[in-house]
Image (tube, rainbow, N blue to C red; front, top):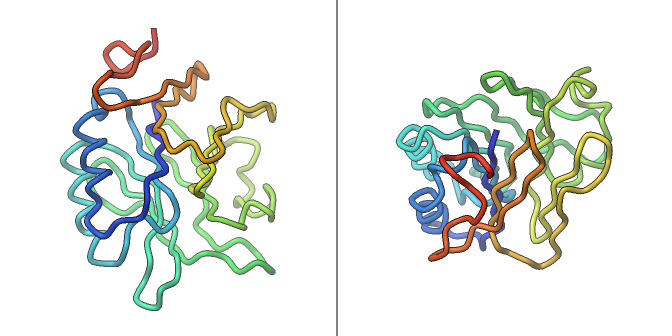
Length: 186
């Protein structure tokens, strides 16, 4: 699975997401955008339409009517596959926190939920293909053995991560992602 990871500023109209989908959708299967990127419940419908149009799995979160973050994953068919409140700092991780998307099993953690470790991932921690953790302004991807694929501090450039090979490519407008051919790294 190729994953487009981006750390844009929060924006009500999701123009950055739309631009990146136009540029990079041929090179990725899924999109991971930061917590709170989707401004409100109305924008969730726009995100569903984008997921359906581009046939991409979308992972992010949105602000509900009370201004609280809610985990959100939308399948390539535009259907919501995971939606839940952010877990409190003390207590159990809210469920669902694990989703199967095709042949990939994904754990999903928001913000400080990472501090709860693997214990809250519905007993699937050892069988997950990856854990999505859409925070900002830092972006990182850690292999199953604990070694980083990349860690970016205050570097908001988008990346395309091949979760199988571990290849990470910077996706920069106007240049095309060097090293990617027909959706797969060289």
